[in-house]
Structures are given as C-alpha cells and as structure tokens.
Length: 164
Image (cartoon, rainbow, N blue to C red; front, side, top):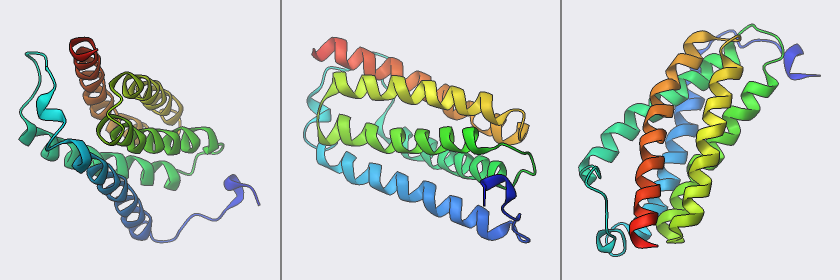
C-alpha cells in the first residue's frame, strides 16, 4: 500500500494531537541539549548586538512548534496526491531542528551548528515549496518558522565569527 492509497483518518483530532506530541518531543529533546551548554558555556560566548534576551526563545519556539505541528497535520490530512516528497522534507526539517541544539549546545561546535542550520533553512524552504500545492495553509504556517530560522542562522553565523 502506498502512502497515497492509505485511507484518510475519519477524525483529524488524533492526527493533530500526534503532531503536537511529536513537535513538542522535538522541543524537549532540544531543551535537554540546551541544558548542557546554556548555563555555563553559552554565557561566556561573545554575541552580536542583535542577540535577543534568553527569555525570548521559549515563547517564540512554543508558538513556532505549535504552528509546525498544525502544518504537519494539515499536510498529512490533505487529500492531495503525491504528498510523500513534502512529508519527507517535513520530517527532515524536524530531524535537523533537533540536531542543531545537540551540535550547538551539547557539542559546543558553533561552525558545525552553522552547517546544520543552513541545511535546516534549505529544508524548511523546500518543505514550504513542496507543501504549497498540497495545502497552502500548511505551507503558510511554516513561513514564520523560516523567518525565525533565518534570524537564528544570522545569529549563529555571527557567534561563530566572534568566537572562531
């Protein structure tokens, strides 16, 4: 049975709930990684003038993860055919999202983290493009995520330059 021939769930609530659990599990995994470097290592780094206060990250990411979850559920629930490439890109961006915290905070590898976040940016952009013909709202929900990751990429690059 191919993904396109699988029956659509009759009730979308479990799909939305599953994606919320998945996305917040990714957030929790990132939080574990952050705990390894956030208290002792990150404060010692030179940061650019546009570095936001630490308290801003949690509320921004909470909203973004909720939007990412809704986008994923909408994409899976979309009646469009051939969703596999968009779903694969969606899964890849989640994996890269989780990997970045582990590389940056746990591994304290700023340059490698920059490579991960650049890949993440590309995969989010690909997910938006691939999702657009399947579910425009799913695609649109990922645009603020791409904007925040664009900012985070600039921030990661600046921290790498200042501490390289």
